[in-house]
Image 1 (cartoon, rainbow, N blue to C red):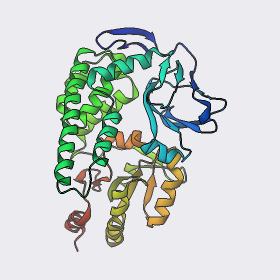
Image 2 (cartoon, one colour; image 1 turned 90 degrees about the vertical axis):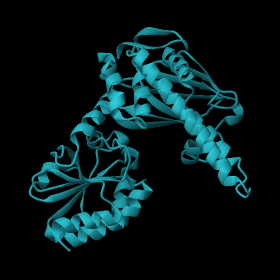
Image 3 (cartoon, rainbow, N blue to C red; image 1 turned 180 degrees about the horizontal axis):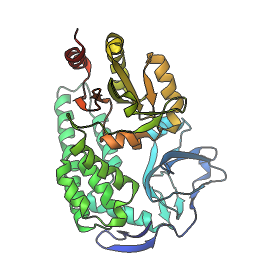
Image 4 (cartoon, rainbow, N blue to C red; image 1 turned 90 degrees about the horizontal axis):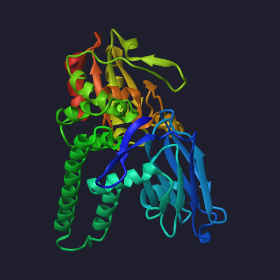
Length: 380
């Protein structure tokens, strides 16, 4: 990715000729030898799919090497206590950063969060960007969680304290969104402008975000996350009741490609879910009840999973455990699932009922509403 401007100082944004001067990224870590034998984990994106790696600490050193197609938001986890990645990535020592084909020299004294990182202009730029908008998203989340945990749940005013903390951190996020929008307006050639707009779009109307997006540079708008945001604008305008359901093709659990248009002539419920999604799993028995009742009358279900490559086995197991007999597909790209991006899906479960002509006739029908809508079509 060339000719993109990134923040080099908190108040000065300098152009960087290219983020791909090297063929690979190289991360060199130095930690106290007391951590020998512990592991560091890296999660990033490669070829559009989630990628992971791990490195054991030997003689106070760890390292990673790989290639990314474009700079992307990534996560590193330092499992200091040896409790495993799952625990460490949720409540342990983590670093969220941008990964490009650069060299990262990390010196950790006691925490990955406060590590000294040298060698990467992109990382310096990202730190400056965060300083300008009011800090990292996950840093604010973690601070909020610590504040909640500090409340004595048995206190007489515990609920009032929780409410005050919630309001305080909501205000922080809103102030951050205001700064994100200002940053995107001032820096249309910054790769961070896209992330600023994506985060703001989670609370603001897309109609407010799109004009700023359209002013971004051509190079920035070609980035993967920018194309996904653009798809949300298109989905908001086109994925509506009465419109044609966008067609897509994804592999089922056996690798066979399945398309929405394969169901022409039938009612098909396109159901976006994931094995890790508790509300999805809780809704499955309700959907199964409706499917068993109306299948003979022409109802089909096309379930699109937002599991990723690491979760393929969990996806297949969830299908079996929940006894879901309908068609299941996934490209295993997680939240970047191309069908989910096409439909503008930002939360699961989410569904779309498509009629025999391929038109969307209902959106997000769950619980009792699902049965009411299907009864209107098929009768009781």
